[in-house]
Image 1 (tube, rainbow, N blue to C red):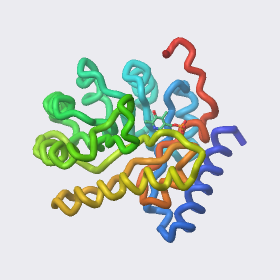
Image 2: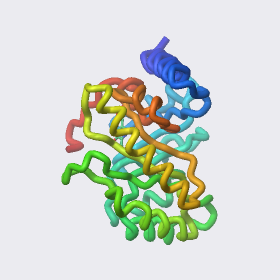
Image 3: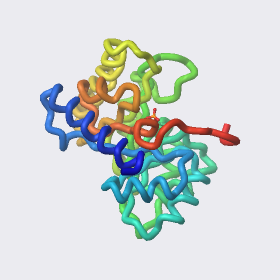
Image 4: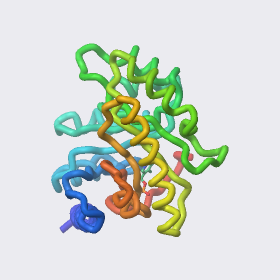
Length: 232
Ligand SMILES: *Cc1c(COP(=O)(O)O)cnc(C)c1O
């Protein structure tokens, strides 16, 4: 058995256990495998182990991988920070974009989404940690942004994404994720039909599942430690 296969099996089992412990159905939580910095071959192996949805952070690296894996029916999610000069490549190559935090970026993605492709699925990134350095829209500005994004013709607003400040304190992890969940519920009570709460990474996905995550983004636990090399 390869490491990727056994890691995937262990991750799926951990997701299942977390869902059961939270009295949720395991089918309510989707696994997004974060393949950034890992080669196309690693993605191919994960696909052979049944994984279809993959997340990438760096546009150039991702586009090369997507090109090399065109023979597979993969679903690509862009989860990194979005620079406005990269929106066209993102709109042309991905089915999902997490991490939208500004109207201008959303407008560009909508305008640049090719007509022959389905609308681009969008999660707005919210800042729940309140640190100035953290990205994401503030809670106060979220409703307005969501109501604007939902008007854009080539986007399909699906929900929220968050990356809370990392901590080993599980109670604190849950407190941060619960805040995201509250914002998600508030948007739904504005009349928006949202179904995706993208939160939880290798170190905190159990807490995220307890607080309602519908999509966990997991890299290290599946592919191993990343070597950023010249990336940063
Ligand atoms: C890298 C990354 C992940 C995966 O993180 P791991 O700790 O390796 O599981 C998830 N989400 C985002 C936005 C990332 O950049």
